[in-house]
Image (cartoon, rainbow, N blue to C red; front, side, top):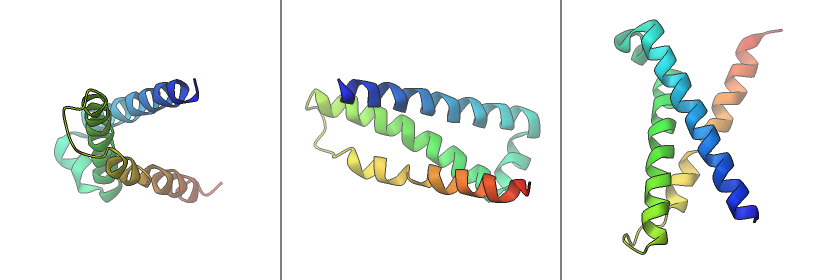
Length: 91
């Protein structure tokens, strides 16, 4: 049951990251969006999250011999991004 909850949380956060990236691309335009390093990290995390979900689902059917944990480790960058947003807010 815990794995199912964690999977759904992963889906929700992935969708949030994708929506954030798409809205910023629409608002700033692709070139201006990609000039900022944090935006590059955001889009990279979104892509890795999608890839992780796909690989995980394919691995459940034993189609790929790839361990999806490697992709999950890269998503730890989400924490760094959240920390940077807090530091940049300067309340």
